[in-house]
Image 1 (cartoon, rainbow, N blue to C red):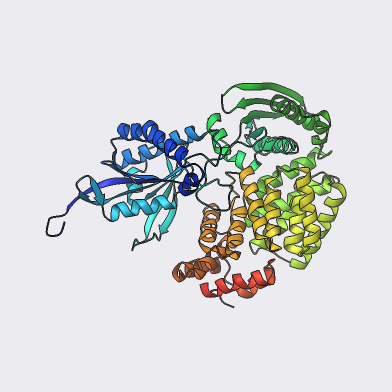
Image 2: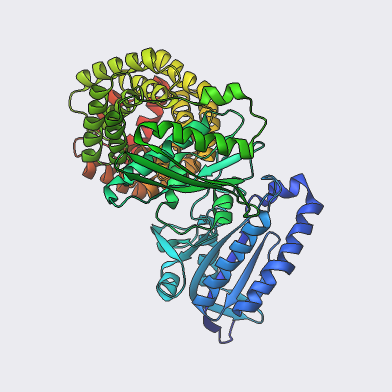
Length: 594
């Protein structure tokens, strides 16, 4: 084109490629190519026709598409990802073809039917930032479409993209049927197929609607659901999604089939709770998320004193509908009356509600309420374990008041759990984790966590705690596997920053700094002030030579806690000495003072 006038035009560009293409081709070259062709003919090309898109070129595992309108481009991207999610439902994880998409509105160089220039490059680089099944778009694209389509956007900030000189503002698309973040269960934060169904009956229990006239009773309805989840989790022959993922649907009108796809489960339980005076009514309906068929529905009435029996009736009915071969002995083992004093149960549920706020004041109030529950019913084991967790949260965020006193309190709480909560997986797991984290008692703490997982193999928090212990003991591969299991049990957990952070540390300690940075970024998207993720991010950036980004992250750490330095890290660290030194090397390079 030398000596000729260059033709340019403004357009919206969509860049897409297949996640894990080389792996798929290595496994089944003919089958992969056949699937790709089918997806192009049956899904991509009809979608482009509906939205006015022009297929510029195919690139083996990807495609470049031009649109005259930013709204049409995003609409096509959302529709295509929704169609692909439908196509992959029920497909084995290692054979499903999953795309990620990048979108940019920019100036393009036109050469016949082909396009070149910075606009194309930005779209391609943004595609690499998208999660499996997801969409990432540039800031100017966002400005052109915001408020014009049924989609929300997560601000990713200014991204430094490969071979793009300037930082690019980017946004992740959150729309029905589009992956907002990767729910991978592998050791990589990107490049995974949608969740495959487990090899045993799988279920998610959605938040029940509070039908009481008093909105303050919301915590009670949530508590009933948590207890049903706990009871179902104790069946080793079921796969039960954790509470935190189920509760992301709270207050929303949901499509049960969509819930099944997003959480990777076959069955969904929904219902309502009405508490009035001394009476309780629980309604429930169990739905097959694949077909939409109702498998069981009932209304169960009783007195408040019978609330645990009512929960047992719901649990037994659900299990009978989806796993009828479970024997009666297992049914009986899963029935555990956690508390005799309903005032203690009430205080505990209120404490849980405060703990989910993840603030300093929230944890302090939660601890007060857990201690109140213990006073009201000293034989109720769960508050002991979650109170121990409150002290661990204080250490994690630098909120400790008196470390020696808190260590003594944790030992006392763990001792009580060991004595009265031998079948209380949640209490055992958190008591064990807190012993290891705050008191550095890895043997006793690890034994309690393992005991919890033997009781309830569906306990996502337990697998996160187990993975964290493995990391501290230098078993990095074990840690990644255990954390992957936690993420699968809790695929859309708002507290996913905990396993994501430990995954970042595990990759960092194995020298995989790019993977560590990616996992840390995911954690910080969930909880921007989570210190563990900030530390992993700063050290990873420093050891890959990205001094500017490393310095910015250290600045965030110091703004949150101006006294934090390398000596603080050493004093708080649970890592082995050799792992400590590797982290300290990265943090020193990042600019964290001695």
